Image 1: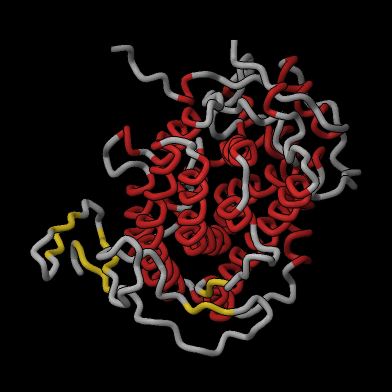
Image 2: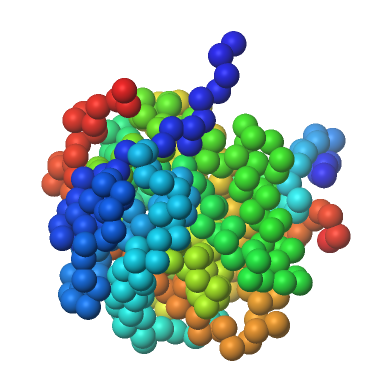
Length: 344
Length: 61
């Protein structure tokens, strides 16, 4: 029997730039050179391809790095200063978008309601995939979500040292479950790699970065932003609550989509596991992570609500992009899957 | 943790906490799958009560 080849045993190659900002970051990393970009004039679209890719590449230095890039660049002061300018633009924009945000109580209540959607009505991505998504739609969905799921729960682990007491114990327990509860073969990132194999996708980490649209990059950058900043610990917890609370019913629909299209047993298992696991996680995150954090630091209430609302905002943008493409019989990726060559 | 049903069948969970369905709507009974949630039309305000929340079982609970 050959040893299991982990998705993350390969170092990803740097992506192709999508504009001035991302070109500057990628060139600095590829050439081992200082960053040749001013930080004073960043006016790029905060949700656009260029800014989101630049940010994604800079954040990735904290996870897996890139082939041919010195690991020490993670703490290069110029890159960090540049990252700060980009993330401020992203964060300020998110704060503006959800400025009319509801109270935390309202934001949490909205997560715990399931919309009833008639067959003829527009619905979210998971409804679409459950009802009529093609196997090719599912492959595209899996490819772009791999940017997160191959490092599932990693951005949230950064919040642990910033929590204490009840919130910390509960957050660590949920993360332990995400990381396979002591069994490497049950790591959710591993279950996702198994799903990708069922769908004949390349499990190599970072393989689909060039294919991912800005809307997907933004959802992953949001987690990294909230995870890396202690000042955003409330927002990180709110984001986690939003993900865990919406995952269980969404995963049920995606498991049905996998069964309907005959995607394969590992593809079904990934979503089946999330139906049961996230019904538990939702309870723990609401009662003990949020409850504990609010008891310790009541001033974070608005930021927890911001984390929930901004997650919904970015997920809705991604959903709209995917459905628009698929309903027009187009690929939702920047590079269709059949043009993505296998890793050499 | 093991849950023994009235017919004697046993369900086992190795999770640190299990959410046990108390509304009887779950498709993965005896575990909760969030089917207790209130269901609303997208354009409707939330006003009716949902079914029972799950009970938590497990270490320290």
